[in-house]
Amino acid sequence: MDSVIITYEQLSALRRLADRTYPHEACALLAGSIEVDVDRSSSTYRVRQVIEVDNVDRSSVSFSIGEDDLLRAYDLMSSNGLELVGIFHTHPFSNAYPSGKDLKYMQINPVPWIILGGEGNMRAFITDEGKGVKELRLLLVSAG
Image 1 (cartoon, rainbow, N blue to C red):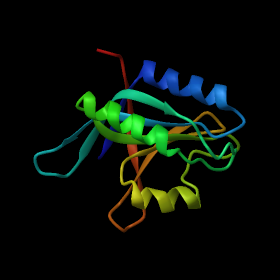
Image 2: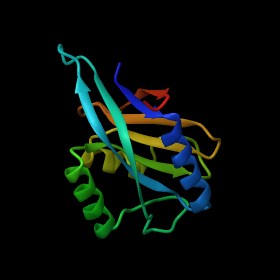
Image 3: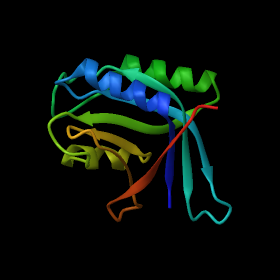
C-alpha cells in the first residue's frame, strides 16, 4: 500500500497553518522524496519540508496557489534536491475527502493530496491511474 510519511512536527505545523487561516482553506506544498519498491507495487512519499503558500481564493470551500508562491516553492525544492511529494489543504466545514474540484486538479497534479477536515481528521489520497482515487496510508514518525 502506498504511504505518506510525515513527522509529528510537520503535522503540528500544518495544524497551526489551518488555525491561522480559518475560516478559509489553508494550503501548503509538501517537498521531499519518493521511494518506489523494487517491484513497483507501492510508493512511499517522504515529506522533508512543509512550504506554506497563500490561498489566493480566500475561500472556505476552495483554494488556489498563486504563481509567485509556486515559483518560490519550486525554486526552494530544486535548490534543496527535493521534489513535490504532496499538496496539503483543509476543508474547514466538511470532511477530509476530495471535493469535485479537488478530483479535477488531482488529475493534473498526480501526487498525494493530504486533506485536514473540519472534524480534525487528516487523510491522504492520490489518483489511481484513471480509476478514480485511492486512499494512502498516512504514517506519523518522529523527526530524525
